[in-house]
Amino acid sequence: MNRERLMTVLLGPHVSEKSTTVADDHNQIVFRVRRDASKTEVRRAVEMMFEVEVEGVQILNQGGKQKRFGRTMGKRSDWKKAYVRLKAGQDIDFLGGD
Image 1: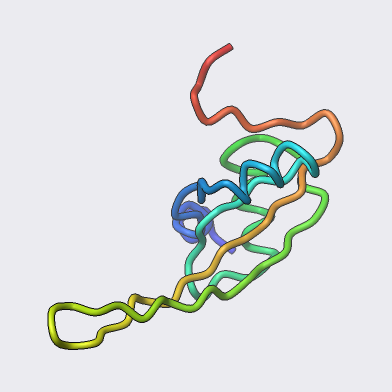
Image 2: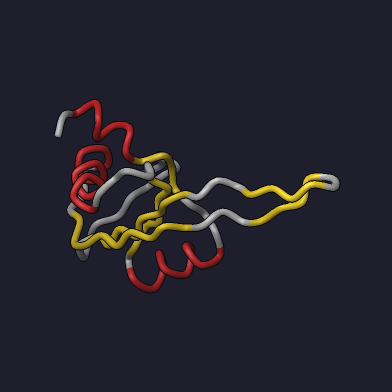
């Protein structure tokens, strides 16, 4: 895997009530990832970008919701998210503080 590919695997952190609870209780971070990303790519991308050690990765395909747009029904795009468990003592600081 080349460096350019790994830089595009992570699309951003997924912030929700559930992801905040998981981060506090289980030392996991939730990321939105590319639809074609694998566990190995996610692991290497997180380790490269944030300089932390990853213990495990779980990937989940999230189906898009059915939504109404005026009179017509539509569907949001499907997407993929990854639960990344960090090793003990590791932490990712998204705010860039001390």
